[in-house]
Image (cartoon, rainbow, N blue to C red; front, side, top):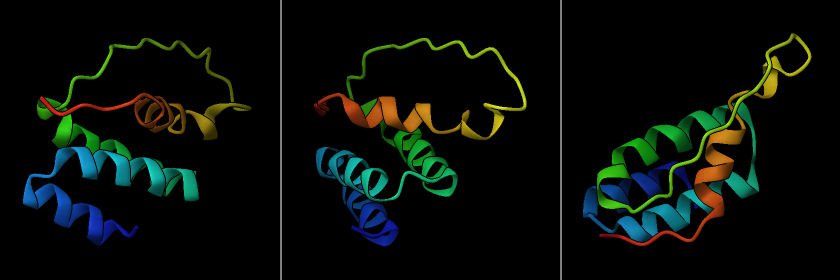
Length: 84
């Protein structure tokens, strides 16, 4: 699934399919660029989805700094999603 396919699903109002597409997209390429895309699209979908709140604390250091963007889309795409 491409970014364009996901954007088409979002524009079409198919939130469940868009969320599933985002999960597949990020699983196929868990990179910082993909993480940024997934987070931005889930922010668009958030009002239509029932997502469980999650808090994550990371003690920052130069060692883990590059991976800080990765947990957010991972946590969002890991849970089953239902549209409201």
